[in-house]
Structure formats: C-alpha cells, structure tokens
Image (cartoon, rainbow, N blue to C red; front, top):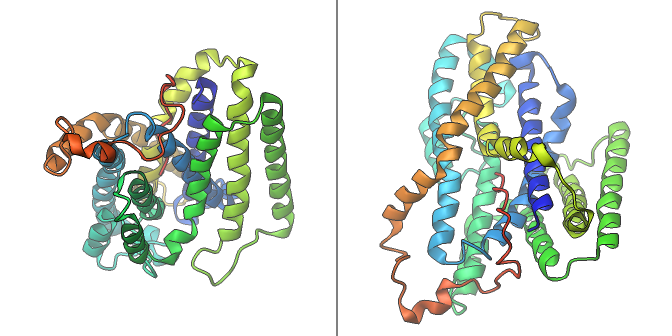
Length: 384
C-alpha cells in the first residue's frame, strides 16, 4: 500500500467515525436535534467501515498477520482493547444516567434496560445479530456492526489458514451459526478484499485510476443529490432496510479507493504537515466510534441545563463527549500492544508462535499471500 493511499484511508475512516458520532449526538434526547442532517449518513459511514476493513485485513494478512496465531492475536487485541472497556463503561454510565434522568434513556430513543447482564454477555461473544437476534448493549448503539465484522474475520481467517480438507465443513458450520442477515452484508466486506488484491496485482493505470476515482465520486455525489430529493431506497419491513443503499455506496466507495490507490503514487502527492494530525486522529477512530453514544447519553442526563436544545447543554454533550473519547483512546486503542501481550499468553497453548513444527509449514502461511508483502508504509488500522 503506497503512502498517499494509507494516509487517505486514515482520513476517510476518521471522517466516517465522526459522521456516526455527530449523527448520534443529533438525537432529540441528547441535543434536541443538532446536526440532524447527518442522521441519514450514518448507515453510509458503516458501509465505508466494512469496505475499509476488508481492504486492510487483506493487506495485513500478506504482511505481519501471516500465521493463524498472529492473525487471531492481532484481531483480538484490536477489537477487545476497545470493545471490553466500551461495554464496561456503557454498563456503568447507563446505570447512573438512568437513575438521574430516565427520560434520556427512554426506549423510544432506542435504548432498553431489559436483562442487561444478557446484553453484556451476548455482546462480549459478538452474538447480538445472529439469525433473528437484535441485542444491543444499552446505549452503545454502534456496537451492532461489530456483531457483523467479527464473523467476517472468522470466515476470512478460515479461508486463509484452515486445512483444505476441513475448510468446506468449517465454513458451512460458521455460516449456520451466523445466519443470513450477517452473511447478507459479507460481500461488502469482500469488496474491500477485492480492491486490495486488484490494487496490488492488477492495478489499473494511473490515467484510468484517476477516471475511476473521480468518476465514482461524481456518481456518489449524484446519488446523494437524487436521494435528498426523492428519499433513500429503503426496504421497509426487512431486517436491514438500507441494504440496497449499502451495495450502491459500497460499490462506489470500493471503486473510489481502487482508483485513488492506482493514480496517487504518480501524482507525488505531498500532504506535508497534515500527515501527523491525520494519523493521530485516525488512531482514535475506533474509540470515537464505540465510546461516544454512552458518554453522550450520560452527559445529557447529568447536564445542569435540562433543555436539550440549549447551547450550553449542547456544548457539554458534544464537546465533552469528544474530549472524553480522546482521553479514553489513550488508555485503550493506543494500548493495543499490552492487550496483544496478554492475549498471547492466554492462547499460547493453541498457537505456539515461537516454535512451529516443521510439518505445520503449510498452516503457518496464508494460502493467498498478497503481492505487496514488502511494501513499507504502515497500514491504516481498520475500522469497526
């Protein structure tokens, strides 16, 4: 992955997380409808995350995650370093916030207090969307996407590392566990994988890449203009009403990043001083995505200004949430190495990373290694 593409993807994933953040704090229960215009773009932001995740996972499995053990450890460290603190924080803040201001947590706004222990256990196992389940951990609304993405990690890991003779049975068993709703969005994640493989093996030329990048962006803009006036193509009554839009936006976004990665190196794009802040904020993306909703609800519940639409209240909720998220990122997302060491100790009996037996050589290399395994720029961390 070339450096301009790496920085660009970092910028895009932070912008997607910020869209979800601002879209959720736009709720009537928290800020009285501030930034209401962004509410309809949150589903698109999640689609972007899925495509980006597939792109980056395909990249890292060709580099430092090229054994079953490293793949499991790095994926677990990445997810649990933020997911577990987010679940614990949600449990605590929701408990206190409900006692102070129950109206903020009214079920009409999407939260529920029913059987919260079950919510926590199911969320730790990423089972909240299996088959017909629809279980969220309290006010942590964005958590639902992890219940999809983790199973995509499992399916991709099986394809990369499982023995061939067992692969069909393992894939079939995993699909039976997940159910059709999770599998329905799996092609979006695979679009990211396909983009990475194409960009490293069969990348279009710089000229065609520029046309693909700009043309897909123009079509995406045209789509937004049309649906702003006519309404989005929602399939009401289905488990995922936005599924048609998911595939439209996912396809256009995949074409966009494929085109950008093809022409960017030839343009000698120099972002200069912008690279460092982009990288820094991108390092808070996962924290911003998971922590913002429970924090915003809690601040709305304890704010001394009871009117959600008042500007002092909005400043407390929006500004306070953003500052607290940045602080939590320093304790969670930026401490993945500590989580990685802990997880390594836990699963060492299953994956001996230091002394792999000679007979296991086929199992310790990806079946389809990426062609860009020697490229130097670090990959952007994937989104939830």
